[in-house]
Length: 300
Image 1 (cartoon, rainbow, N blue to C red):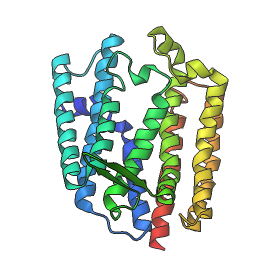
Image 2 (cartoon, rainbow, N blue to C red):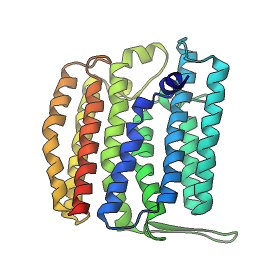
Image 3 (spheres, rainbow, N blue to C red):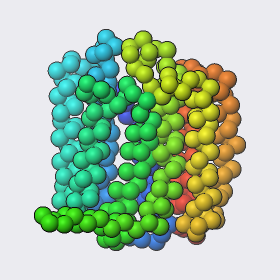
Image 4 (cartoon, rainbow, N blue to C red):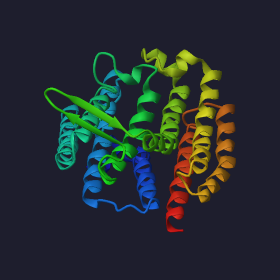
């Protein structure tokens, strides 16, 4: 039962949310700021369980349209989705109750986009938007929300809602810092989906799924694949130059050697079974190295 559940929710793919979480924790530590573990753990549970929920929804819908089988009866599979969704939403609402309306609104956006990624008349996954949405929601919103609930009030933005006035005050430099920090998880997460769509483009067309590689063409899609891996390294250099990260973090640039090797391998052959793994390897290489060097900078 447990193994079926883990397979249904594809537990092995959850590195995209966990690494973004760990990188942000490392960054907070490097700033020598206290971590509110109560809020952080509530956020983690909501985030992680919702990641499981979206994958379950994706598999439930895809097996219906592709006429594939599930590990459970469809009624049981649907009930699992409901239970996971309620757990995630419950923790999310509790977090919003303990914090403020910004967390509530951003959390609601995450839930809406996660549900409609594969559900609805025009699912996001069947459009050339999957890379953008997955990159932004895993790569940007996880770090931002985690930083928002741990940093002093007003560090990034202040939203006030009233019957006669709605005001939003945004701190430009801190928000730029968050964006630069998020470049790595945004680009590497988007590239996992891009690599998947490049490998599956012919298969996707047969089921009327027109993803980004369909519109770009194979060669431009591959060039985008490579470019997205160079951007995290440019972001690290920019953050060090701007004093946002310690110069020690430049040591992460060494990993470009291994990343480039995987890029070259994928350029030669785009195959789901043989070379798609290159995108997973590059994700782990980039995210693990950045998380590690940021943590080490905090120690030193």
